[in-house]
Structures are given as structure tokens and as C-alpha cells.
Image 1 (spheres, one colour):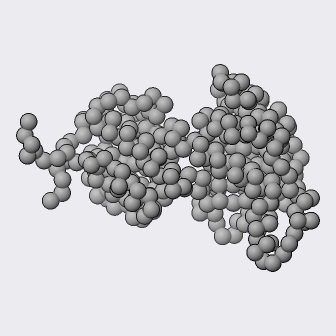
Image 2: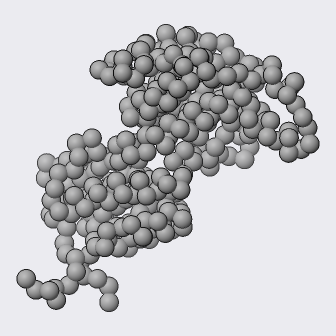
Image 3: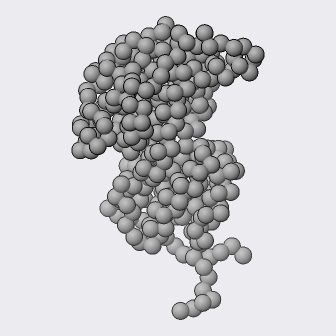
Length: 342
């Protein structure tokens, strides 16, 4: 063995809003020694070289067919999170690029945020905090519009890792849990204290409806005026999944009229949320800036999971089945060896 052989280096382009300076510092500290990381937090920061010279991509940002064609050395795309609808997976298969996600890595993190929004919306925490800071003492104003989560019926739409984590958390609140999943009932529903229901039954019977399903044509706009009309009067809507699931104008109308009593939203059809959005003016809407996963301890968890997959691919090992999205029939040639920069 030649101890003087140059070290193998693998160039990784990290693309998307998650990769802010704080995340970069954490990732640089825990990245495998053989990885050279470059970052583009915003689209305008992505250089041509980040595509043409990288061996792997770690992304939150969309990845198109055109980008894959330019990224001639890329054999592996790692998605940060579980939703991969912004990656052209058909193009990845054609280009021989393997695609993986981080299944379940931040399920508890996102589930915590969903329950936090339930509590904040139902108890009008933001309104109470703002009033107190302004010198107003308003318990009598809060009482008619505030309610507890304990003992309520919560309908979970989408029952993957995050939906199941929400069900586990709600058991501590004595909630009755209904769930809907396109594939039908799951084997572990009894252990999770949940019961499968059709969408109409879930809408009609739930005090809180919380969304945990992927985006795409099948779910886009699913929460519209017609769906809201099927919900229990005064229900609460929670969305930490995809902004496109909700028709925002219909939601605003329902919140203004009292058809829905409150909403807690972490995602929006247009991000950042536009300054003129009517949602900004509603006291019964609790809004957070797509920050359900933006925690000091979540970066290391997500990055570590991503790096494990990338190292496994680099070594020719199998990616864990739950993470593997595209396993091309004709993979691009193995990653070339790279030497450290002088």
C-alpha cells in the first residue's frame, strides 16, 4: 500500500435554504474527511462549477433534468428531508443517478412543531403574548376563543413517519386520533392509538385536521372550499407539510367567517410568504417561516443521516431501503478519485 498516495476527495454541492451559515458551520465540523462541501443557500449563489465539478449533491432546492445533464460527475443526489417531488426522478433514472432521502430522520422534530402549532392556535398564544407586550391584560377576551387540546379528536392526513410521530405525541393529550392514508389502514394503528377513516369521516369528526402528506398533482389544492365545508364547524387546520396542499384564499375566507376557528401554518403556496398575504392580518392564524426543522440539534441529525447515505454510496454499499428513491438500472460510472486541493 502506498502511504503517499493522494487522498480521495469527493466534492459535494449543498443547495437550498437550509444551508445557512449556522448549518454550514455544523456540517463542516461533522462532514467526513474525504468530503469537500460547497454551499448555495439561494439560487443566485449556485455557480456553474458547483454542478460541473461536484461528485454528489445534497439538496433542498429543486433539481431539474437540465441540472443533471450539466452535473456530469454526479452519481448520487441526497435529498435533505423526505419530500422529493422537486427532484426530477425520471430524469435521474435516465442519467443513471441514484437518489435518496432521509426517511424518518426529522419525524419527531416536525411532529413536535405540528403539536406546537395546535396548542398555539387553539390557545391564541401569539395574540396573548402581543397584548401583554403592548400593556394589555386580556384574559376575558381570550376565554371565548381559546380551547384546550386535551381530549379532542385529531384527524391526521398522511400517516408516514411524521404522521405516526404526531399520533404518539397526541397520546399524552388524551386525544382520539383518526388518520387517512392513501394506501389504506396500517398494521400498527392499534399500537399508535389511531383508527383509519375515510376523508369525509375524518373531516366531519375532527376538532383538528393536520396535514402530513407529500405534494404533487394528487394532493395539490386538496384543502379547498369544498373540503373545508365538510369539516366540523370551528375546526382547526394545521399544515407543516406542503403549502400547495391548501387553497389559501379559501382558508382565509374560512378563518374570517369563523367556519374554521384557527389555523397553524409552517408552509405556504408561495415562500417567503408575500407581504400582502391576508394570512398576515388574521389573529386566528399562527404562522411560522417553514421553520419546523430549523433547530439547533436538527442540523447534525439530518446532516449525519445524509452523510451516512453518501458514504455508503461512495463505498459501493447498499443504501437503506426506506431512503432509496431512484436505483437506476444503468448507473453512471463509479465516482472518480479526487485529490485534495493544493
